[in-house]
Image 1 (spheres, rainbow, N blue to C red):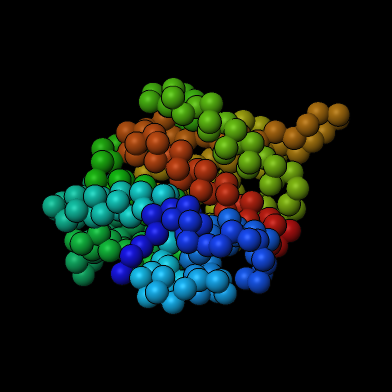
Image 2 (image 1 turned 135 degrees about the horizontal axis):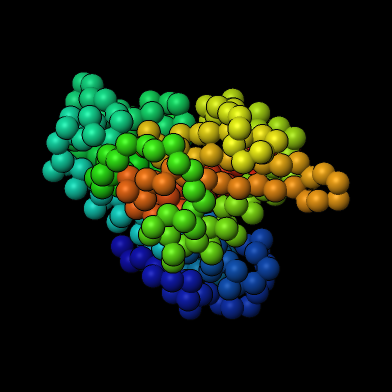
Length: 267
């Protein structure tokens, strides 16, 4: 059975009269919807049955370029995990080995990985979590935490990512903290955050653990005396020894996007 490679493959089969009988404003928008799997080709009243027999009557299964790349990356990572001694890695990176799985604490919840790279956990496995976790297993040096906190830009390998991190992560965290009263309560309740004191004279300071050897310190100061609020994110200075800096960026941006969604949903 033939498959569409792009929107134009669909469009060239249409009458191009923008009749709107498919409930789309134009034939081009109908073609895009067919290619993306939102609607079936047969919903165009002018498509010949011979063409439907060639391309099928069901909605096509569509994967974005991002989804295709994600699957490719995960396949490669799982293949590498399959060649790793998970039991010895567990001891090195702050996990434990149980029933054939390496188990890590992620935001306080158990996150297990077996020899095939399959994931077992009660938390939702977002696309920004899985690759960094597998990379952590594969590449962490297991360097002990020092308790010395530094901003992302001061990590040794952060040069190419620092500017993006400030915009995509720090500013996003600050925006949510400024507009969502429940922000810090959500961190404590949903992500096992721990409130701490005596950190940079912040009004609020919380530590979360995306990974055992990758804690994140969030410091926030309320607006006061005409001054704007202030939020900063810090990592242990060993962070990029235990996880490649691009994965730290992925985890942090994913987390900030999740907080944004929570803020929109729950206020």
